[in-house]
Length: 263
Image (cartoon, rainbow, N blue to C red; front, top):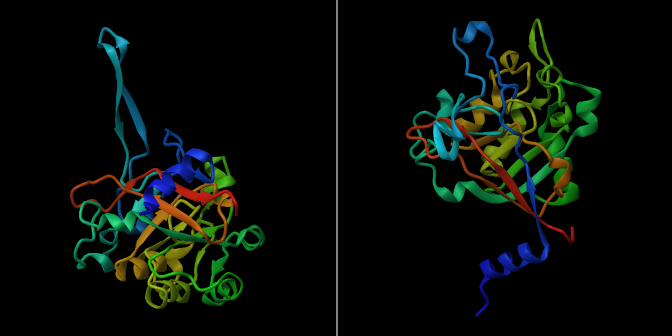
């Protein structure tokens, strides 16, 4: 009897399946989302690391660090409990989400040209339906990754693109999120930007539509992804496992994709 898992392992060893890292490096200047002042007096901690010992008098045979950051720092996972609309679901935090949530097929919606032409570009339902006309229907329980090449902005200021009225980066039209959550029943969506919503999402209706509608439907999110240009439109498997934080709203995570090299 054939064993599909052993076949995957063999394909990984042979190079028939490539592992693509979709995660940014956590460091002190990793950009983090700052909420508008009217939404609260306190924002997340930036990432910091304090050395405990490094093969020295503090610990002669070991190197380790203390780290400090908010749950939604760098490449990170948003659980449904993260938003008020998702607070009443069951099994909706990082420690209670079904583990099968963390491994799923993914599709990549390439909107790089649109994002280059308009920094506030909003991906619409019509855009998704046009993509489906070429690549087929978005599979149930898949991750939908929104490629903009925004992650190629290596300078934190350019990445956040913040001005007096807030950040400016691509996002979602609310109808697109409703379509994905309700009609396609996806696991969640992922973006290359600092959060899953547009930079100007506070002015949308509903406010922050990706968070509001996706988590309200008990779906998840991934933000600050990179290397989406190395993935095919369909056919890859995404692995995105948050830390198992009790009642956690999210977590930095190492997101990887398994990609057949024949594609």
